[in-house]
Amino acid sequence: MIETDRRGALRAGAGLAAAGALTAGCSAFGSAPAAHRAAPDARRPAAQTPRAAPAPRRFPGLPDQIAHSPRQRPQVALTFHGQGDPAIARSLLTIAEKADARITVLAVGSWLDEHPELARRILDGGHDLGNHTHHHRTINEMPEADAYAEITGCADRLRRLTGSIGTWFRPSRAETATPLVARLAHRAGYPHVLSYDVDSLDFTSPGAQAVTRKVASEVRPGSVVSMHFGYADTVAALPAVLQALDRRGLRAVTTTELLT
Image (cartoon, rainbow, N blue to C red; front, side, top):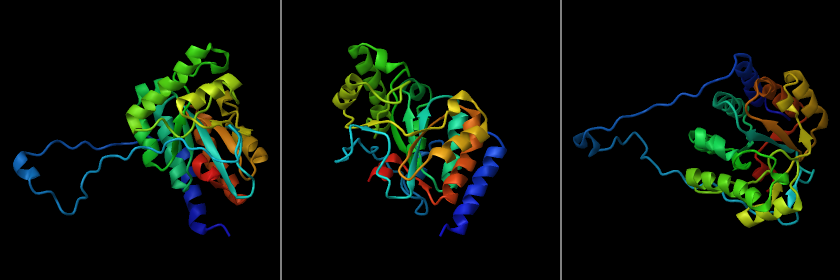
């Protein structure tokens, strides 16, 4: 039985999308004089150093390139190529969280250089964060040394920002990796390459309804869905996509949870 409060969360996500892209605010606190720092406020929890993000892990019994999980459980993974307008990224994260959904973000390294705060924002929301190469070039056509530099370049940014190289690697501008790129990803520390079995085609800007129809018509238990940050159609479509999953009893979880 689908819980009523979860449907309410989905309707709240739809309202957010209709209002347009959201922006995330933040607060800055100046340093207090030393005399006031001596006695911390007991009502305020002590500041904590962010924990290192989860590292990649091997899933025994699953192939080196994963397109979906076993089909037994009513779960799917919505995966997003992390690039583009940070306001759209924040909107998509907020919509997912309002609906109690979790997603997987495969971030482009150069995008993280421009918006480093988004790495922690993704992780703090309970989402997966992974590697989508450093410059988002056609990695399957690159010479070995250049392709390896693309993988490790993004891995280095992730490690610097989060303490981990990220949980997943997905090749740029390709659904699957060539055997060479898969070997290079393994060498860089990623036991699996993350592919997908449903392509939303949101990057073609076909309109929110077309994105929703494409996902709803193809998704199955265990599916890994490819979507993108950076497109207004995706923001508009996500609440309806989540509603379509909910009607079918499917829950959007991180890729790690999907495969665990």
